[in-house]
Image 1 (tube, rainbow, N blue to C red):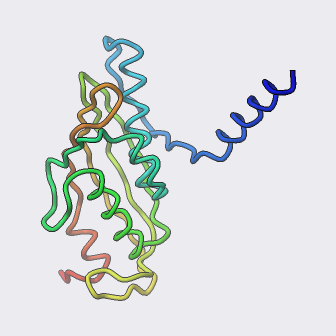
Image 2 (image 1 turned 90 degrees about the vertical axis):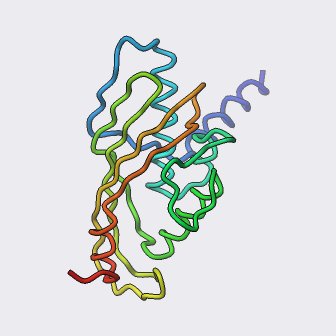
Length: 172
């Protein structure tokens, strides 16, 4: 009798320690999708967006397929999961308090579109420049292709001009 109780407590403790998933401010979904597919796609997108919000690599590994492809891979970034993990680490070194908000999430077919807002303070280093606490606030949009509950491809665009201006790298 004690064993099931102990297992239940361990399961509960494990969930309590897990990183909470980010919730979109607005969720728009195609209600013609089978419920299981819709829920799996939302879960994968929330995990990946929560990874960007927290830096928790376990969330990226849960969200991304083993053959994940970044369809808009920036120059110098490694393709696949390793590239996403490295990009997060690099950016978090520059902006340690980085936060990601999901303004809206749109789910249809095998795609999820996430409109994101990143914010924080530039207190680390980026491209040889030392931050002095400058506020960072810029937007990005991701289009995830999801198969069997994992993100297989991502098309990503962000407002790099605003970001680079805020970092003091580009002057206008």
